[in-house]
Length: 309
Image (cartoon, rainbow, N blue to C red; front, side, top):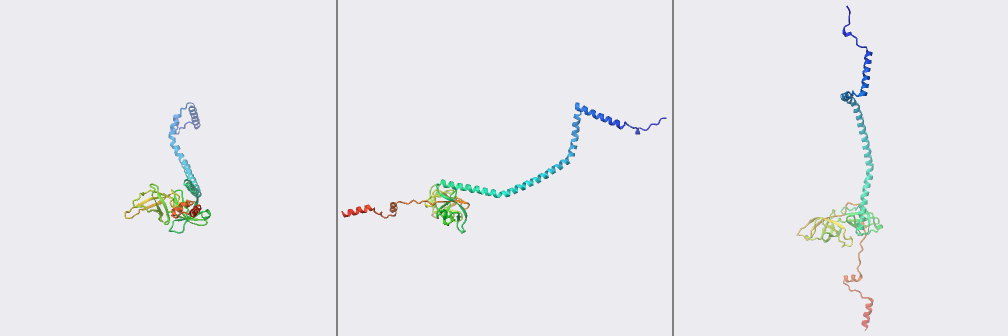
């Protein structure tokens, strides 16, 4: 009777034989797939199932890379922001000064345009400071006697009348603004030609006086110089009517105005040359005074001859 080992202990094929089989099978599949692409569908199906695993495997690396890029970007942006802030702070004074110079140049051009438009001669001056008297509206300009400035000259800006030179020193002059309580300017209303005098109130406003209570004056009326005082050229804007109080119990209306020119907020003004007052011929002067005209020398001689005859 033969003895046989149990099936559990039966030995399979040799490992070398299995290895040879698997190698041959792999080479065959590679050759077949390279020639006929028979495993393309299988490869796509496997890629679908393995894609989540690949993403999960690459996630930590991508997270680390993104975190590094984020922090480096934040650091770079912070550095650029600091550089820009530093450049802005360093360039702010230059920028402000450039803007200020542009504004001053534009204002000077407008002043020169006023001189050409009004056919007036004058000198551009710089406002130095306000006068020491707190109860007056006066400023000091940087031109005086050495620049042939004289008291009484009108002062304008690019919009209208500013004031009048009242005191002159060797190197500076004092200008009384039209808003000063002691300043008066003869004006007329552009709309209807009514003439009157506007006085400063000392508080930045003016008052148009000596107008009847029923005078044709309206809010918004523009007042210009009439030129009757022989100081200001006619036609320069002075003020605009902003408020009217009419009371029939009073003979005159209370008419309040605001200056058109930048009386309280300017840096450059123009001092116009004094107006040339026209002189009357001697005979017209004598007729105006009512005194008899002096006889000519020839007339006296002729009169003597008549008396002798």
